[in-house]
Image (cartoon, rainbow, N blue to C red; front, side, top):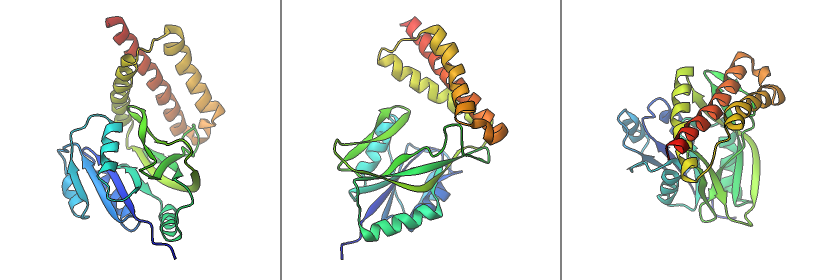
Length: 256
């Protein structure tokens, strides 16, 4: 009989007192240790995490990708299960991972569906579901990559991926105001990253046609209208994100 697989749960935080407790609770019975890397929260995040006996590390934030790679490097096990603080493992996914630990891995990484909750409504269209993500993998064969702030796990060439049809529950935004603030924050990061890489803006395409096409694609072709008023809010906010990102990049390029 093979030895049970050891998994490290990894979470990065900053002022996540509203989310961190339920996130940690969903990991407790699944992983063998929990690593929380915090960028010096000023709320009760640290105190809440302390109740669960996690390894709590304070580390200056240099970017989402950098922080998440730092976090997985603190794990004692090769296998890591990474969640954001506003995510939880569904009961079904917890049970599947427990079985996986006993039976042994059949791949180098595992991809899960992510079901997003927007202002109290589960969004099942708009291109938001199944929103498949690699979140369990052998850290010797993959690391966080992508473009800040939109990180993704990048596996080595030749690694095997297995999809599991069970959900990570993602509590995205509790209010429209919170969403608008996040859009402003993330579009600034994305525009600066694009500017650093020398990307250009075609005014009519990037700031007019592309946001419009994005809305049409998500609301109509991806059936966002089936999510009702919340589906409209998700799709129009996504179009606004695209517009604002390229508007900020346009200004940065003009000032360069």
